[in-house]
Image 1 (cartoon, rainbow, N blue to C red):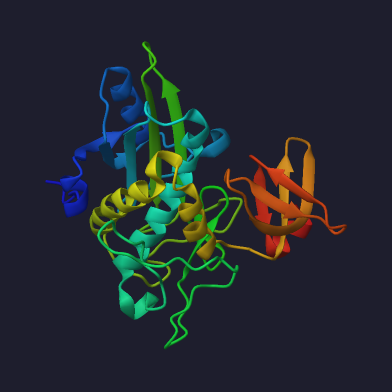
Image 2 (image 1 turned 60 degrees about the vertical axis):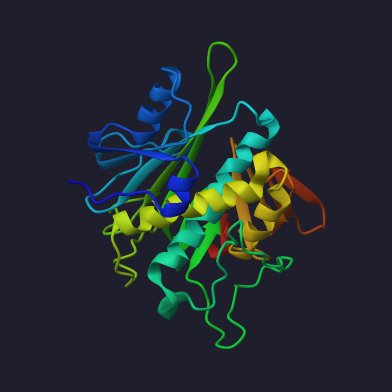
Length: 294
């Protein structure tokens, strides 16, 4: 019997949960259900995923003990221009859930995502790592544009947002969450890690409980796209590489510069040596010292 369960806030918001022993892809399963008329919000979790997918056609390896989950989210009432913002909603929710999961002894300096009943003033992002005013502790988790979570520069998690319009005009989005909890794949072209390898012991089931609740809070803040500026500020608070060198491969072109910010559309803003700025909608990103070798 699976130990996966929805958090209290997710249950109260009407979310539902399907848990499978094995699936090819949780994103594919969720979208197949949407095509059959399922509207969501519905979480699809797999204990084993045989054909996981990442961005740009890449594969996502799912190892035992890791979290593989997808959320089917209705977007018929969302302006299509705002739908990509759900990827940033997911990133903010996942970071908040990770901080909550590892507990205050590891991330006392982190700032939790405000829940609807709590009023927390926002502080404009400066690019500095979030710190606790009393203890100066730094949250270990960083968001890499557009869809990764890093620990000490190594990939911990990936997010995959897909959207589709169904016959009759109904629209659905599926957000996939792949988190290395117990182990990370080997022989990858980039460094990867897991919570266990980073000395944060938890279970995928417990992390999922927090993710489901934190997504409710983040989605309410996002407010069908009208609150993206607040999501953007939270995302920037935990962004990797602000103010540092970045390179972005866009097809056959490589854009070099300084990662300045993300704009109100979620695009990467790169400042070149001559001070000109370029906004990037999609591309393969290399941060820091890796930027000069990209």
